[in-house]
Image 1: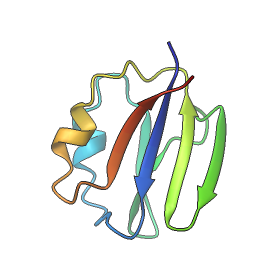
Image 2 (image 1 turned 120 degrees about the vertical axis):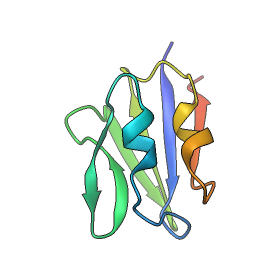
Image 3 (image 1 turned 135 degrees about the vertical axis):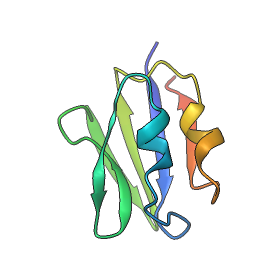
Image 4 (image 1 turned 135 degrees about the horizontal axis):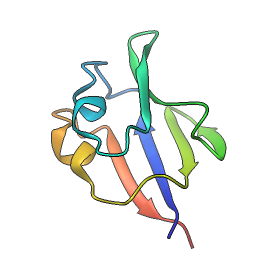
Length: 80
């Protein structure tokens, strides 16, 4: 199963709690004050407004990052 990681940069505060809890380490260090998916792990990346969507094969869909994000900036969706 493949998942899409969506980060709303207008909400992200760059605290990197998502990175700290991710069991498969898909997040890189924050860039420009925002959390990002590790570019080496993003199969494809798309930006729509303030939302950056990354297709990440390594994501297991556990949603630990969603729960850890106090700003609710992260959403995980199953790729169809």
